[in-house]
Image (cartoon, rainbow, N blue to C red; front, side):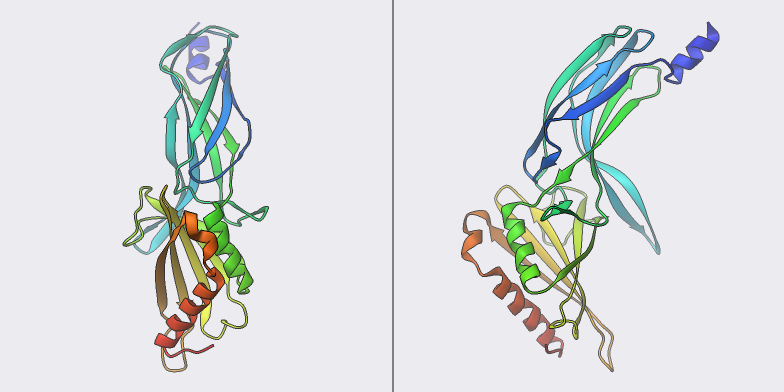
Length: 262
């Protein structure tokens, strides 16, 4: 009897949990739908709650070192406490809101190298090991984000990788404790003055904030410097702007201010 209680405390013979998404694809500000299927184990348990949450991999800098960690940034409780009898089936449908600032993971049908995103399901059982399930989620860009990405590709920039960094962007309206950076290789037309271009989107229900960072190449007598640019995109008028022209002008003006020409 004591050994059996020890096994129960370790989760052996306990309940199982599995999440089924109607569609794993979503956009920032959208939603995910599905249901969680809970099946009772060999013995009755007291479930404290059932919850789902979005997690992503975040880079954290501390002094001269850095490390990566999985961070949950949106969470929704689906139930309160309930008794789960042996082998009983308990299905819980859900509608999960995806935050506007959620990092994107897919562009033009391709996965962004370096990005991870998943919906985790947690079944908190009293006096036992938590049961959890993780389902991959694909976050596609908003139409406004697509316009900016398309403009950069038309200028000849190529995707390098993306990551998520813990911290805040100065001067931006930001709710989440991290932001995404999408890195690009420059085309030959800009390569003499730019090592790489980093793009950050911070979306809100009213506007899209776009932050650009250029890693400048150092000249013969000086070191390279970063240049920053920030502008807002209005959702209703996004198709009325020549974004390739706007971005090209900013890149050239930024370079000229630092004595570089291309």
